[in-house]
Image (tube, rainbow, N blue to C red):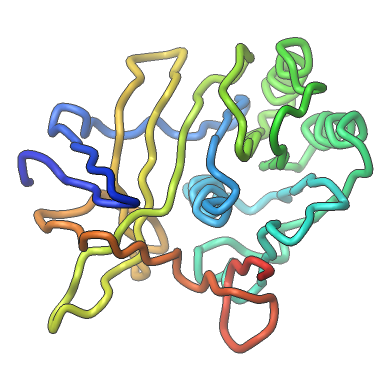
Length: 248
C-alpha cells in the first residue's frame, strides 16, 4: 500500500496516512450512529449506510424517515440501484414527516418496532429538536430492539449526542483504469467519534460490485480533480438504469 493517498478536490489536497488505515468499526445493531455529509454528498452517505446495514445477511425491515418537503436537493432512491448496492429494496419503507418533532417521533417508534433492523433518519441544518435527550432516547430504543439506528445529518456541525460512532462521508475522486478511463466509484469515510476506541481516522473506499460492498483502495493513485459519483447516481429522477438519483 502506498505511504499515503492524496485526495485532490476543489483545489485542496488531503493526505491519508497509513497508520489511519485500521479496520473501520462496524455500524453495529443495537446502537445509534451518525453520518455527517454535505447535501451534495447525500448519495454517498446513504450508500455507506445501506451497504453497512446489508452486510451479514440482514433481511429485516428498514425504515427511512425524512421530511416531506425535502426540496430539489433530496436524494431520490431507485429500486434497481438499491439492489445493485446489495440492498433488497423490498425491505425499505419510506416515511415522510411534516415537522422535526414528527420525524423524531416516527424514528423513535420505528426503532422500537420488533423486526426492524435498520432505521435511517434524514436531518438537515440546525434541526434543533435533535439534541442530547432525543439522541439518548433513540440509543435506548436501539439497544432494546437491537435495531441499527443511523442519523444522516446534512450540512450540520456535530453536536453532543449519544451516538456510538460519528462519521463524515463524502464522494471521492475515482482511480483511472486502462486508457485513463474513469475508475470505480469511491467515497471517503472519516471516523470522527467512536465510544469504544480511537477516532480521527480516515479511509478511502472503492465500490466492489462483485462483492457488493465498499473496500479500501489498493496501491493506486486517485484521479486528480475528477469526482465520479456513486454507481447509478445520476442527475434527474427519470431515465434508464439508476440507483440513487438527485433531482436537478
